[in-house]
Length: 288
Length: 201
Image (cartoon, rainbow over the protein chains, first blue to last red):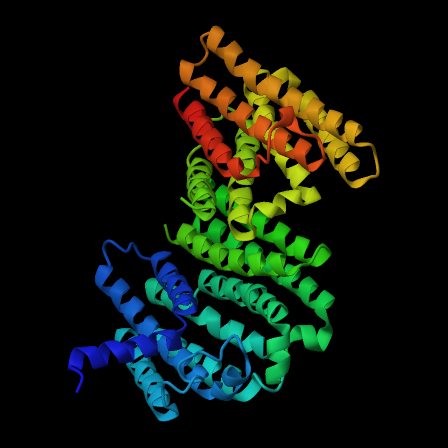
């Protein structure tokens, strides 16, 4: 019989990929940045840690439930076949329970911090698990719009908790994430087009063609960078940070335009990666 | 040390140095100079990010030729705006025409020698400004010895860009081999020199 520690270590090793650490980390960073855009982290360290903990649990919970619901799709796609649930290393029941426990803890903690903050975190969870994953993902490519709205909730929640009410800056930050999502997800669907086709998931490239999808990516990139720049101006960040934000935005826009006029797999993948780095850097600059 | 290390380390350092310099209150005396230096460091930053994400092969892209020329042109334009302000708009005109010339000869069907000469002339003029203006202000006592860092940085980035462009256009600079793997280190070195030059002059 294995000692308890070894068993726990083994389970954690299996659970870890279920929460998509990079994606969860990025969304968590937006939530923390939203809070720090209103409150100095040094003087509100306790609340900041609570924001981090509650968002981490809620986002992880929704991601695990997403994996639980999509286990049949994951098993069909070479890219996702090795995920613990799709590979049969975890049972469906265990994964569902894990997702529910993490979700309840995260959303519950959020309500414990502040009711409005809790409602926004719950809304994000609901849009992701129920509207995006269960209801729309297999029916329409427009499901990503709801995925985007859900993705914008952590930053809105963090900002709202920081200022005590919902404000224009919080909404604009959520809009920035909403417009950033197509750059992230559509680029991914261009890169893994065959995978999504094989799994029968409707995507923009399949519905509207590659050219239109690339154009949508460019337009949404432009809107995301505009929203972030406006937030930067409204927050009154220094000219230096604003210049840096402008430089990073131009880099993203040029890459999006290159993807329209000289598309290649390398460009799509770079755009996907750059978009993530851009969001992380932008949030850092807004939070400082 | 593998090739990946030699790409990642210098380019990451270049990104952080450039980001710091852009975010910091710029030592430029005029708004035009501040924006010109922002463009220069901005291209260093974004180009380094792209090189990390896409690999050094991306240097073969025709757009890269124009971007490579923008770095020395923007730094030299900033220096002209600061130290020879009467020539600011004349130099901007030259920079724009030079860029158009490089872009036109790169995308149009023209002889390799014409491409090389256009690139050499534009980079040469930018390089001359980057070397001579800091020397001039040093001689006039307007700046300290550190200002020469700008000259060194500008020259290294200019020569690197020009050598690579010549290579891409089919000309071999001095019979040397493939210079591409050295580019990340050259970018890092020139960024350090530029940062030292602008901040300690």
